[in-house]
Amino acid sequence: MSIDRVISLGCRLNHAESERIAALVEAEPDLVVVNSCSVTREAVRHTRQAIRRARKAHPDARLLVTGCAAETERDALGAMAEVDGFVANAAKLDARSWNVAEPKVPLRQQGTRAFVGVQNGCDHACTFCSIPAGRGVSRSDPVATVLHAVETRLLEGAREVVLTGVDLTSWGHDLPGEPGLGMLVAAILDEFPQLSRLRLSSVDGIEIDGGLFDLIATEPRVMPHLHLSLQHGSDLILKRMKRRHSRAQAIDLVSRLKDRRPEIAIGADLIAGFPTETDAHHADNLSIIEQCGIVHGHIFPYSPRDGTPAARMPRVDRATVKSRAADLRAAVRTIRDQWLESLLNEEHAVLAEKDGSGYTPHFARVALPEKAAPGSIVNLTPTRIIEGMLA
Image (tube, rainbow, N blue to C red):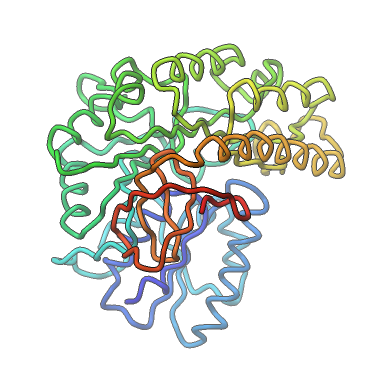
């Protein structure tokens, strides 16, 4: 099966899992899989659109839905004429769920970066989030399983490995001895000295253990790029979200990392217009962008998820939510533009992608010369910025 018949929405973990699903169902040419997302109402809408597009493109195929929306939105999606059935999210990597044999040859890496899922599910109860209902409790892959997955991706030619998970920094809490994620990262680096670029997907800053902090701060092979599940800059809103960190803790973490590794690029998820958010709370959200120097901002206008506590809280009107989201995006854009300017006229090791662009270690996008082969690491000195991209 071509991987274009496995349609992936949502997080990096979903995309990593879609590669595995494609390998499992490779010999099923009449099957289309939609690996869905339900993190926001917009994500559910995109899932429904993807289902309709997939049916239109493959009218005679058997169309199955898996992923988080297959759990949280099953009745609504099951009522769609385009859907033939579901595979439980927790079982989607089990060959038996697809009535196929376990493939002997893994799917070759589709890109230059390999996403390796090491953890699934979540034990927390953020008031805006429906992911625990779709993913279940936190579950960690054992070290040996992760090392095997990384080895496979390296043999397939991947130049950079990205560790992913629903709650990545909770990795190990359910394993014997409760190891921290820092131990796993160290084990990967020790086992594979040929791996020159290891990156982390979104992390919960409050769960960064001492070993992981030291690796992020000092290890050249751990990329100087950290994306935080920050969500907001106001302590009161963080409390109402049932997050476990404070504004001061987030700022302190970033400050300590930048003291040790000044070039580190900070990304963050931020929600605009959370229920009960006032102008003062929004101002706190805006100001934390500058205080943390957020250059990779994922801004989400709040959308209520049925069954979550936040959906019962007094809402901010939609026009204000949209306006505040625009404010946050503009603030990130200002910080990002200044950051990109600081990267000019310096040499960077850029991992070439297939689309003619590539990424520096701090995840700045760079326009590549035509001769750069996908998967190669090219040393470039950008001198200008074109539409937000170094060139």
